[in-house]
Image 1 (cartoon, protein in one colour):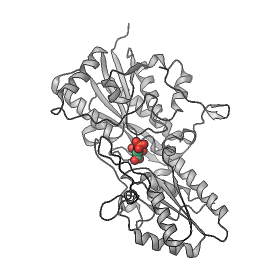
Image 2 (cartoon, helix red, strand yellow; image 1 turned 180 degrees about the vertical axis):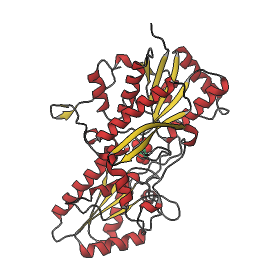
Image 3 (cartoon, protein in one colour; image 1 turned 60 degrees about the vertical axis):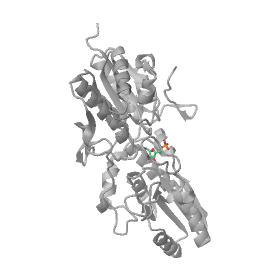
Image 4 (cartoon, protein in one colour; image 1 turned 90 degrees about the vertical axis):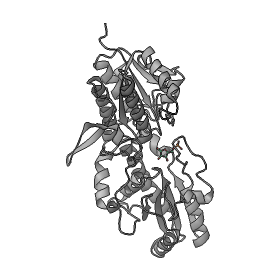
Length: 412
Ligand code: F6P
C-alpha cells in the first residue's frame, strides 16, 4: 500500500525547450519518494479549475519515455497565462481549487513557471496556511527570459541562448555570402520582454571565425533611434554587411516600445504584458527608408524557445534537477518556496539546487546589470559572456526518426 497521498504538477507561462525535463524530474522523484499518484494539470491552473488533469502514469511508461520527455519542447501538459485573482476579490475560486485538491487527495502542488506563475504559488501557499489546509506548494523555475530573481539563471535560458548564438552565426555567414558590392543591414529580433539576457546572447556568435553582431540593443537602456541611424551609417562606410540584434522590448525615452511605432503590441495578456513583436521589421523598414540600402529583419520568435534539437546538456540536466528538488522539498515539508539554481563554481562549471521564499521572487523581474553593457549601451561586456558561456555547453541529441526529432505527446 502506498504510504503517501498524491502530487500534482502543472506548467505555466511561455514554454521552453527544457520545461518537460523539469516535468520528468518531478515525476521521477515523486515516484521514488513513494507518492501514490502523480497528476498533471492540463493547461496549468486554468485547466485545473475546469478539472482538466491526467494521471501521468497513463502517459509515462518507461525510462525511455522519461528520456523522450526530456527531449520534447513546449509544455507537454499544455500551459496557460492565467492570473489568479487576489483572495479577497474571489474567495470562491480558492474554495474550488482546494476542494478539487482534497477530492484528488493531493498533498503537494508543484508549478513550473516564471515570475507570473510564482504569483500563483505565493497566493495558494498563503491561502493554505491561513485556512489550515495541509497541501504544500512549490515552484520550479522556468523561462527563456532568465528574469527570475534569486536564482543564478533559469532553466530554458541556456538552450535558448545556445540557439540564438548559433543562429546569429549562421545569419552573419549568410549575409556575408551575399554582400559583394551592395550593402545590407540585417536586424535580428530576440524575445525577453523587459530583460535583455537573450538579446545579449547574440554576442556568443563572436568567435574565432565570426566577428559577431555589430550592435546589440537591450531593453535595459532606452533606445535613441537617431543615434542608432548614425551608428549604422558609420558602420556601412567600413563594411558591406551590418548585423544588429535588438530586443523585442526596446523602448524609446518616452516609454513607448519601438514595436508600437508600427502598430504592434496591441494584445495584452492577463498579467498586463503587451505582446511585443515587430521591432526588427520596423527598424529594417526605417533603415531602408533612411539609408536606401537592402535590409532584412529576422524574428527568432517561437523558434528560440522550442528548438530542442539545439538544447544545451547543462540546461536539460539542470531543468531535471530543479524538478526533482521541488518534489524532494515538498516531501520534506517545505511550502511557499521556489527551487533556485546556485552557481557553485565557474571553472569547472558546477551548480546545485537551492530553495528560496517565493514571496521574494513572484512578480519581480531581474534585468541585466548596467555594468554588463558597454558605455554606449550598444554591446555586452566580457562579464556577460563569461556568465552565459557555461550554460550553453554540451548537447542532448534528440531521438531521430526518419530524419526528424521524435517527441512525447499527450495521449488523451
Ligand atoms: O515569457 C516568455 C516569453 O517568451 C517572452 O520572452 C515573450 O515576450 C513572450 O513569452 C511571448 O509570449 P507569447 O508567445 O504568448 O506571445
